[in-house]
Length: 273
Image (tube, rainbow, N blue to C red; front, side, top):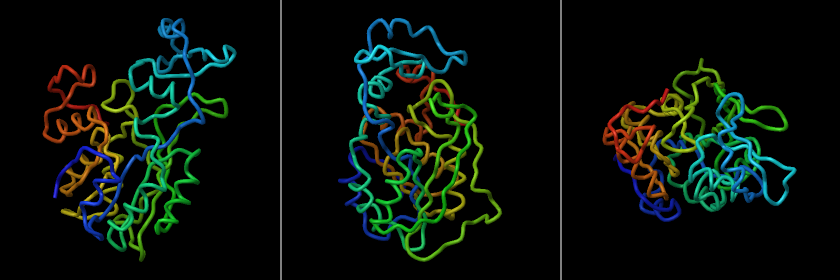
C-alpha cells in the first residue's frame, strides 16, 4: 500500500479500516501567532534590506507602524498567507480536535505517532491527543542549524510529540537520544515548512519494520512518504493543497522539481540534507 491522495484528512481517513497503520509521522498544521497583519506596499518594495544573515526581512505593519514583523527573504505566496493570517499552512483553520479522534482508531494497538509542533501549540496538541485516546510517550527535540528571530530568545529548535496507542512498544534503537541534530533546509524549499528527509527517516526507522504502513495525514511536499519509501516501508499521504500534492507526486515518482524554480519542472535532486 503506497499511495497519496488529494483532499481533506477528515474525509480521506474514512476510507481506511481501524487498526490499519503501523505508524503516524506528520508535521501537523497549526497557527503560529495570534493574528495577521496588513503590510504596506512600501515595505514590500524594500525587501532587499535583509537582516545580516540574509534569511529574513523586516517589514512594517500598517495598522501599527511602530511594530515590525519578520518574513523570509524569498517572499512569495506562502509568505503572503503567513503575513495576512498568521498561518504557515493553507489549512491552518483545522483544529487538533477535528482530526485527532478520526486518526486515532486507524493506528494499530501498540504503535507510535509523531507530531511536529512548536512550543506555543504543544500543550493544546497533547491535551487533544490524549482526549482522543493517545498516550504520551516522550517529547523529542529537533535542533536546527538556523535560528528564527524572536523577541524572547532566538528559536533554534522544534518539538516532536511522541505518542502511542495502547500497550508500550520499545523503539528499535533504545540507545538513541531524544535530541536530533539534522540540518534544516535553508533557502528554496518545496514547502515553506519542509522537514529534512533524514529526520523523518529516524522517526520511521525507530518505530516500524520493513513493509509496515506509515501515515502522514498532512503530507505537504511528501518528505515523510519519501523517507518511508527509502526505508522500504509502505506509506499513505494526504494533502489538501493541489500545489504541494503535485510536487509530492513528482518527487515520489523520481521526477524531482528544482528548488530554484519549481514551475520549470527541471530534473534535479532535492537538497534534503
